[in-house]
Image (cartoon, rainbow, N blue to C red; front, side, top):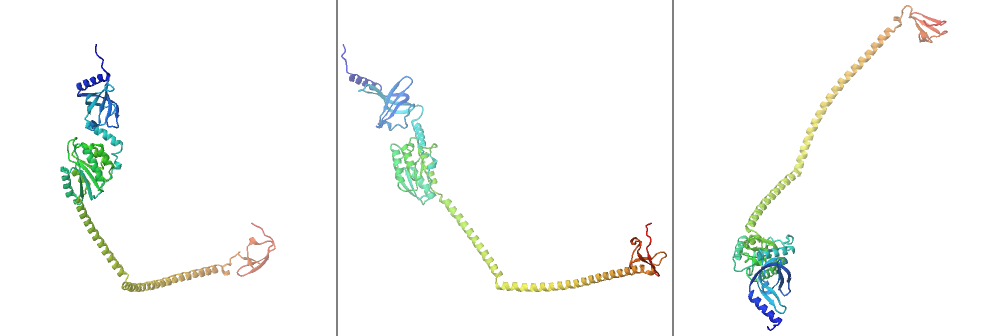
Length: 417
């Protein structure tokens, strides 16, 4: 008969068996029951359609996890089976986790990008503008890389008046993100006009420090305008989105940050030409004003006024003489016209009087009593007034008069024919 063993012994034997049998396993499943513990450990489960297994990833391995685990996410785990003997529970101890069907770095990049965009880190309204003429620029980059030499050459050719402050920084490998973050914070405290954070080109792994959240936070919190100038990659890095300006290369960052001294020289030449032309125009206008004032002064001088008065007097004299002559001529013409008019009117008046006299004479001759002596015709008078038979009545006393005789008569009978 077998001797019974204790529960602890059984669990120890199971632990030894499982941990020596499943030293390294690759498991694919869907994340569930996810917990990020304050200690830094990650507890979760992976499952498929039929089964579930508990998983743990201790803090020592989480620092190599490039992306954020999410419930429902499909992952591939590299690890081994471990047993917690006091409870008799077994779980999968995760050493490495990769997203299923997608690279860890690509997933981590998209997750951080979405997170920072939601927090407003990419908002264009908060981007700071670069000063037009910076005097001091802090360079957060490696002191031994080619980037610093390229930036110095471009600056010497473009704007040699600027002062550079190099902050030697680890830009690749473990701890690079923390070093870049600290360097940006230090540069922000130096009261520089611009901060350029960057490095030369490389693989995505080499440039990954600029995709870390700690670097994004340092850029976002800086008061100094920052240019992100990392490598020759076509795709944007997280630092490119958060920074105020993105440059394709460190040399391009210098071109963006500094004005072109040659352009300013040409601008100064154009200003000089414009100033000279403007000065010539001003002098010409002043000269014309002086000439005009001189002419005006001459026109209003006493000599000119006397000359004007003399000419006016001469003109008046000439005009007066002409007017007198004209008036004399007009008066003579008027007198002759009046004379002719008077003679014509007088002649007409005399003719009118002569005609009246002739008419009166003719009437007198026609009405002379000697010419009215006709047989059977007498002049009837009543009360010494000539009248006609129509005005007589029975009993009237009238006189009948011919050129030679007067007869007094009484009307006894009067009738109309």
